[in-house]
Amino acid sequence: MKDNNLKTVELFSDGACSGNPGKGGYGTILKYGEIKKELCGGYRLTTNNRMEILGVLKGFEALKQPCNVVVTSDSKYVIDALSKGWVYGWKEKGWIKSDRKRALNVDLWERLLKEIAIHNVTYNWIKGHAGHPENERCDYLAVDAYSKEDLMIDTEYEREKDNVV
Image (cartoon, rainbow, N blue to C red; front, side, top):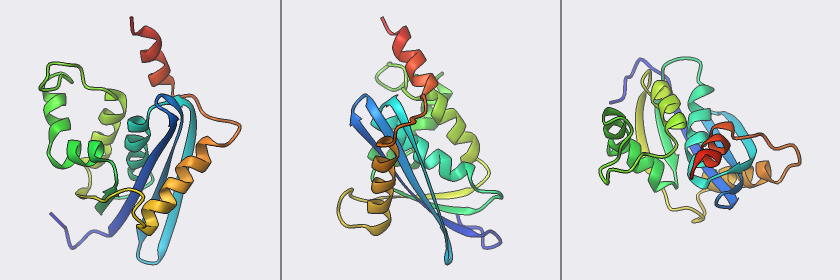
């Protein structure tokens, strides 16, 4: 529910991967009135869903005070997990989903839930690659980020991947 005493910020985000898993990146745009801030980062080995979550997370981490935040993403995984409350159920059950399998990306979900808790948040899903200007820009930022030379290490993903039997 919107709090009229708080600033309203729009958060647009997209994640991309070249292969899944593979090189990946996120692109995020924060808009407050006429002010716009772009964020992006690239990783040497990750998944598309991790980059989708990370894009939203990085947007929230950039906020300096509680806000009304309108999150817009083309990721059904992220938008549905948050807006339908799935992620809260997974957390309550020790990160076990309704199919009795362990939820993925717990490290990122935990960080995101902490960030979201101090804001009033609404979620919008949009179709990807459908000409939405901010979504197209976020996609460009994400792809550009993983196309660079010095890619970061998604430590948690690589550690989990190496421990899978």
